[in-house]
Image 1 (tube, rainbow, N blue to C red):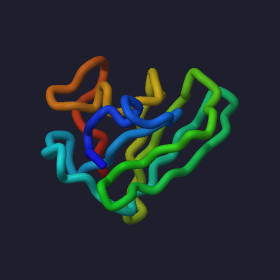
Image 2: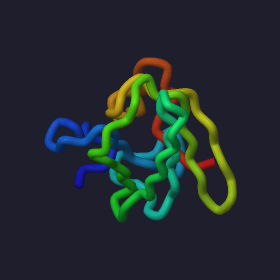
Image 3: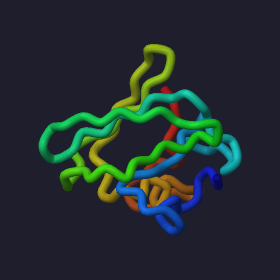
Length: 107
């Protein structure tokens, strides 16, 4: 898969993104085994684990608007505000767009 790219351009995911070691990491440097939690509009929490490319994804429907997100690694947690859409890599790019501060990254 293509870390950092628009996963939804080719796949029917409701939510997808890539986790990196830092906000300024190269697009090919995704991290495996990182937990991502998304809280939807119904306060339902869904948990994902990044794969070998650093990607996490789901086709399961999420109640919009999403409320918050968190990245968890080695017991450390980084909280984020709710993503505006399910394509996390749309804003978490280099350079970042929207209100993103760079790549989705571990604490």
